[in-house]
View 1: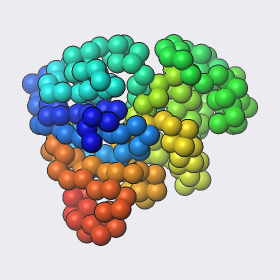
View 2: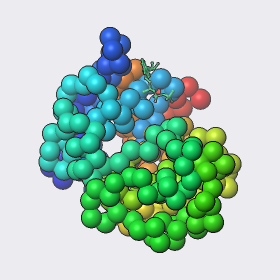
View 3: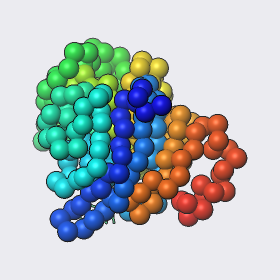
View 4: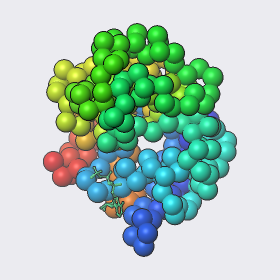
Length: 235
Ligand code: ATP
């Protein structure tokens, strides 16, 4: 039901300079869903998230977010509509400490989490408040990156490979955090190579290949299609 969708992406095409990377990506997300984009390296998943956030210079097609077409909107305007993006490289300012990193993002919408609410969600960040970005472990950096976007008040969150390079116990913690955000009504678009992690969280899955969505599954249809999925992912 596209009328009820929070985000609808239709025939999204994107270019890096002369390189045509996305060739018509189509998918949608309903409010409150966790949706995961799956696909091989280089398929175009990161480019899809960046395009939605307005970070790719040349893009065509249609991206409707809460009823507004944002295909030509600036990242700043898109952020103000209540969307946030947590990049794969996490974007922590290494010369700033945890507190400074947390105070940086503008609180663009009502409902941005207070520092107290952040510390309730991530108790270890409170202990590390004065630590410089470079001194944090990968897991702490990822938590800080998530905490930062929660400060903005955005209710639609995009995470690019949040578990990459992290120890299993931290991966589990990030999984609990995302599940908790879902239960609080956040809508989440996830790019994830860790299929097991994604399969425990996501309501629906889209498979991206060569800059297009080539198939889709729900949590219900996925178990009967594991062989097909494995062939898409080359595993
Ligand atoms: P990965 O898991 O490797 O990040 P992905 O599905 O997220 O895979 P993208 O990062 O979106 O893939 O990359 C899609 C294609 O765009 C790849 O062929 C990649 O080489 C190319 N690409 C990515 N960034 C740039 C860039 N800045 N300039 C030119 N081409 C790029």
